[in-house]
Image 1: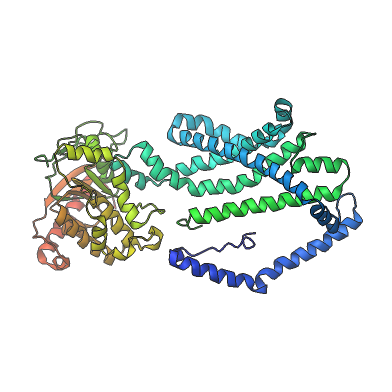
Image 2: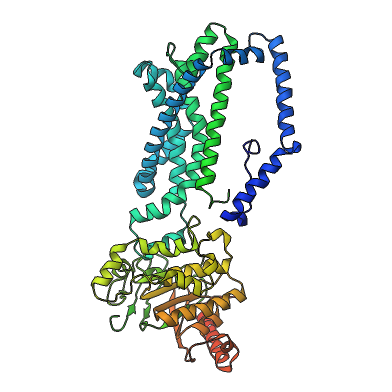
Length: 278
Length: 266
């Protein structure tokens, strides 16, 4: 996966700005070699054949790839609109969840009493499949964007909270002592030490939470029978009408969208965390 | 500076007595080392002086202020054993950041008319210790010695009244260590801050200090104070002089006494 996304693990000594360009060029050259891309392409071909075989043997589970492609090219506007709906739900929910979780993480890291109260609950809720409350949210909030955004925000909230709360406390004791010796205020310690130190943890949580946000949005759409739009609704409606090719087309679009989001996070991480050796 | 600086401590920390009946006066502008075996409360002493911990008994005065007031007035610079640099800031950024926090403290210091030292030329200081090429490098690109030099400039750059160093060269190899001692002395000659230097090394204590305080553990206490009366500036060559050896021997002796009195069996 990492290789497919074009990531190079650079040795720490090579992080200077001057070598970055050269490194990227070298990396490009390597990507052109068959040894680099051939295994992946071969696997795709094998999977494609397997898929076609499956489509013949189990026509109620698989649709032929040609049909799926046909559905996508026949009405790309239909998929685009619904993709944008789902993407918006996912990103708005993620945004709300992120802001709320980050704010609570700051409170939790600064105030011990709150930390001891909140963190055990947060750990339990982060391993609870919160998507299960989707039907309840639909009943309570209706068929609009509301339940999708709320569910996505909820699903994203706890992983972010736990990671960021850990990150904010990841400042080594000697560093804290240096800055406490010059009587830096708590706000200054937070701004100059804790928040930057938490960034690797923020990105770790984003890698988890971007895919989760898609899951949250889609599950909420699936639970809201009769939702007008979104890829989850497309899947629901199409499968009830036995239009398998459309179902699979929507799933492929979701997979592509998820990969795209993951790639964006990785790219942003490399930009922001150039000082971090992971 | 406000006349004589007095550090008078009587600290009784929790059940385990980390420091007991410590009485110590450090003259302004002198270089004092604290030496002693692990667990004798050397680092605790530094945290007490800089106001990070409070003594359970006794009082500490720094330039006529309580340690907390002194810290708020940015009177201290601190160099820990690990360089404790921020990995996302360049060398220059790391050295500058302490000036950006607690600005009110620096202003208060100026308004008292104590001095108007302002921010020294940090780039020049870095060049002076041989980091001129590395101003914009990240800590990950530096060697251990370069990192520790950055940490020292970060502390000196504050133009502190009191400089606290907690085994700053403990993790370095012998050559780097001696080079850094030399640079530390050079920087100190220029600023003449009061230095409290915690160390494990006898020769390091003798080379750097005007006064060496010997401590013993359980409970942490001062067992001896040795004045080092060697001419300054003290360059590399002094290490091989007979006077230097005499002081080393005396200090070694004193440390052995500290051990035997505390009943530590080795």
